[in-house]
Image (tube, rainbow, N blue to C red; front, top):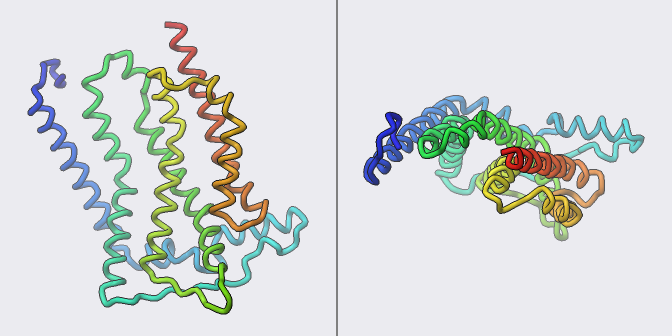
Length: 267
């Protein structure tokens, strides 16, 4: 249905979808241009910051270790890996890749809003009211996930992989490999943090329930701890620091599913 309440043809839907895609692409390009121009700040203060000993996450872990009475066992004392560019275009293509992904992250609320505006006319008023604020909450969870990946998972992953050594072979990574790890971790956690949103919609259509989530809570706990053990250094403290936010999201998802069921029962 169009905004005027008239029935739209298949070609009309395609035309509207094309317009949404074009506007989203323009937003991504605009964000990418901003990131491209701010090269020095982006790379010095964001991209390469986790390679410095004074990175905020390293200082926080060190302070936590002291507070827990563990001395400096959680303090990062050296960075044991280095970066290099092995091709003439390596650094320039990395700059372009960072700019493009940065544009996507910056434009995420607008992109999701365009998707929502395309889907919204086909919903009933009751369904629209049920998901009021969906753009805000989805964007909030996405940015929270990106920040958690950047400040939480990424430094742990870099330290673990950078310190992993076979014999006396030093770790010399390409800048492209470094960037792929950074972008995959941050974007992946941004998507993982959409778990409550996914649970909401799956519960709305009857494919999931709060009872199912409670029933498999122990299984989820084991799976989360295994994932945390794989992506963090082999010590219990690091695994717990990574697992806690994901467990909180799981519990929030149970609450979300329960609220959906209550509203369905009330209707």
